[in-house]
Image (cartoon, rainbow, N blue to C red):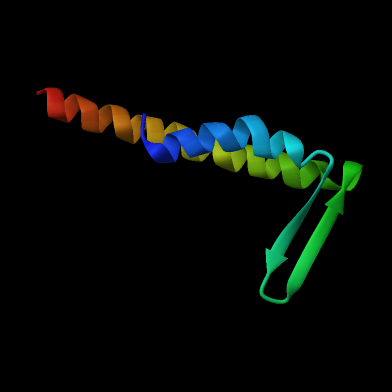
Length: 70
């Protein structure tokens, strides 16, 4: 498993669930804070994005491994 996929697993397991309490998005123009229920749609979008990234990373890793075994 690559460091990138490990980070994605960790983020999905620890960081995303922690967002359910509250979180802040830092921008160049200042922070945007989300609390409780108002954050649910953002959390859902972040989770879906990270799951797609993880799936793509695992697919690329499997492809690379298959090439190296040939």
